[in-house]
Length: 277
Image (cartoon, rainbow, N blue to C red; front, side, top):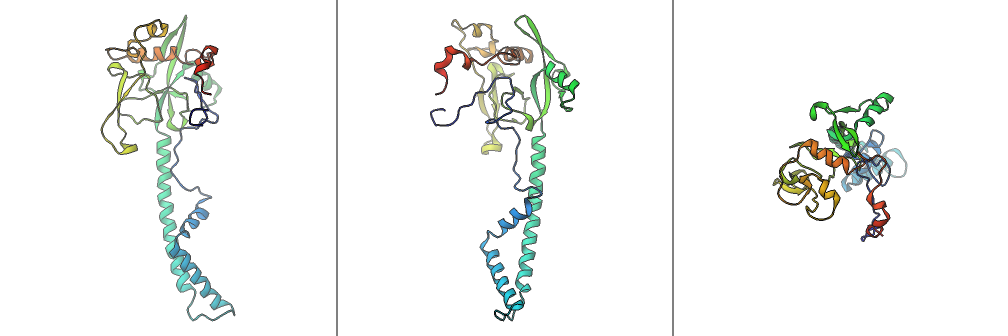
């Protein structure tokens, strides 16, 4: 657990986490399903004091009209009828509003996004017919794979087109200029100078001014071998924009996309002191 008492979670960079405590990326703003609509919506209507009052009055009138307990000179349906009409109109309005929520959720969850994958993973699933919808995004690198050198091996990396709801923790997402941010992301690379990006958060907090986000940097000086081998956009100091191929090369070499059987640095016994207690 961390210092706040919450459970710590370790994400393998480049490997999808499909099991709890990791959730999927689907969005749900609707309140009802087809089966739960009537019981939940009717309960919601009778949380209003006015509807409860008229229901009780109508019930008393019904007893006075149809039972010998007491006599009522007013027909019960003069109260229950208008109440039923008002509740029916409210239910229809609530159903229409929730239907629009369902449609909005469907549009949001099926928004097309691009995720980096090993080409062999996509091709093997296509041959096995496990996921019929697995396909490359034709707008990125014209649908072609990028060949990345990992040590002495060459690993083809594809840009898979996936729905937003299918993005999972550990995925490496490719976001183009002016596209919607599909999930909570950590900026790893950018085509801007220095690996920086500007993000608009008006859909979250209403602010339309652009906010600067920086990709992580390593010190340009020192014995760190990773810093010496990394692309210039990852190093401190002034540097130009990073190409797509260079960014993919750097990220794949630091993630499980390039090292399928690799393990995270947190599992190294030398890093035991850095692990959360």
